[in-house]
Length: 173
Image 1: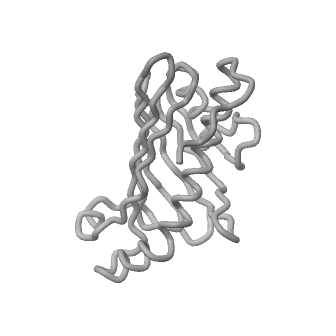
Image 2: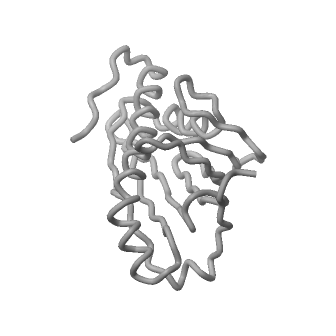
Image 3: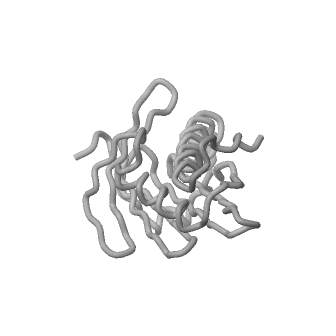
């Protein structure tokens, strides 16, 4: 079992104010199906250079993975469920980990021979009203936003190389 973990509870989630993660919009010079496959490879541990992943279970459209993500000076263990809806939608929910709850979605759209990736997400650090949101906003959001940015830029680089671009496009500001 992973360290200090919390189960995801929808009933408690409705009573707390989640912290919104930074929305991200990235243009990737690769077809949508290549980007979709790069995201799948990331969460199954099949993406070269990715962080450690152990797949607990997998069905046609769902993957439950144990992740080890470096954030700041620590490595955070978590278990997430990823749901893939081809050709361009991925959602995730934390099942176990350092946060009380955590969820997000990635939407992929074809745009002029490339793919527009949009990420939105949120988390709840603690169910203590106001204090949980405040600490999550001040302390945790910046670390989590950096982890998400690193993962998405890795997906971008790998997808662009797989699509035949020798040099990945520079990240958007």
